[in-house]
Picture (cartoon, helix red, strand yellow):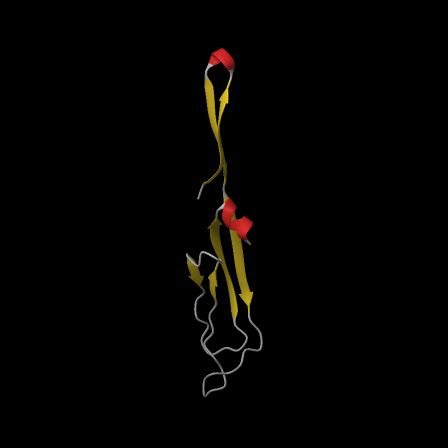
Length: 92
């Protein structure tokens, strides 16, 4: 994702104009490692947890880990990368 922060025309007298932009690429990597001591939701005393990630305020895209069946202490070890605009980061 490219965000244009500034676009300007520079006059250089008799030598013409230079038009330039400043763009910022921002990537945020989030690694979901584990959860601990989750409450049991199955009759067997376990649960089937997963993690859903979204970057507010946009809410899209979102990412979801794989479901870890029959575990109250799941290990995920999954990394997700969000692309965010410069303006998006300023809103946080």
